[in-house]
Image 1 (cartoon, helix red, strand yellow):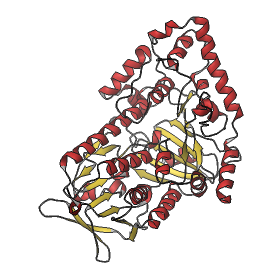
Image 2 (image 1 turned 180 degrees about the horizontal axis):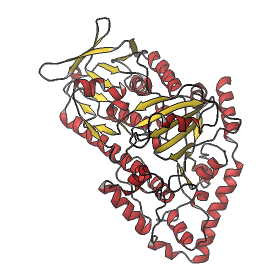
Image 3 (image 1 turned 45 degrees about the vertical axis):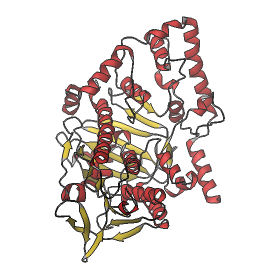
Image 4 (image 1 turned 120 degrees about the vertical axis):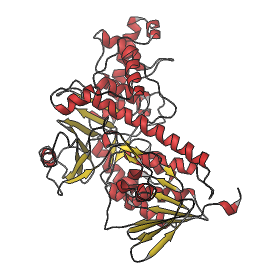
Length: 506
């Protein structure tokens, strides 16, 4: 290939978080010689309910060289150490999925395996007490990892953010436009396809305007204006495994209490409720299955379980969990909700935008659009999203709840074979192996499996090499050190105030 085959005109259809994350990243990576145009309509608006993230968002922000304190101030962000799951295994039971490590590994054996042996003898504290993230979160404390203390749990703290998605999109819009991205206000009314190749040549806008390009990125949300409506790519429906198909969202005022450094997910009779604390409000939502709960019942249940006064009318979203059969089709790449939808149970939506952008830059094409590149791109996208799917199914399937038809169906459903095998392996001796670069690491699977009531019958054989008194001392020392480290951390509210003041002073 030579310079004449280089793609120079990129059109992004749709704004919101997906569109402006894509525009900002491409404006940073493609520093010169590219024309990036983003088309969006304020009349259409965006979904804008995704406010929880996972730690990889920091890599995106760092790649754009965003100042973290400024980002926290401008997006009304709080810090996130994990997710608190309430009533998922059984009513009245709760567990924490914390980011980062559990305990301290010893040699080739994970700490969890040593804990398993003691727990089976009734000699260990609950698993939550061996995670610095969990202990700190449940005490409403926060501190970023202290890399200068490599042998301390304080060096192992992993965190993400809660933020206002609309403010984040506006923040990135300013970033992208300052780097030459051109925004056009308008609604797409038609898509022009090449008569022979079927490639998208241009999008027609209201007012008889036309925007031509070589590479088109579909960030139009559930509608999939390019990837589906124009190219008829097809959709793989996963609602037989993930049956929730509605979400009601409403913000509420912050109560007088602390801003908690975690998302809370509470199981409900036909789904679950999220609580995401920001500096200026709390984001709330009720994800539910319309086969078991009506669109009148769901908002009422949500409004009855808020921590403060609602700040808007509840808004209902309809969705079908699943994915496009191809994320990249011809010269169109779908990013965000146009590529598919994983419900927000583990805050993966924004990460999937981020990973799709990274994948696009890794496979950035010439005008010839080699099919081998497109096929490999799609294979990576499929692998990532199916592993996330299985992780989400685990939350619904591994439960003892039998108090509603919804939970009966989830508990007794047939799950995908890779998930069935992973559960069987864990129930044998507590083993979890991460496959390739799947998103959730071993300790995420361990925490959710354990939290959802799965219990291994045995443990790693090499644990037996450690004498009993030494084993008990090792495990207890880990618990004690983590508790002491968490006690040294400032409160989450105090840390946010410090960061915001730092940003304002800059």
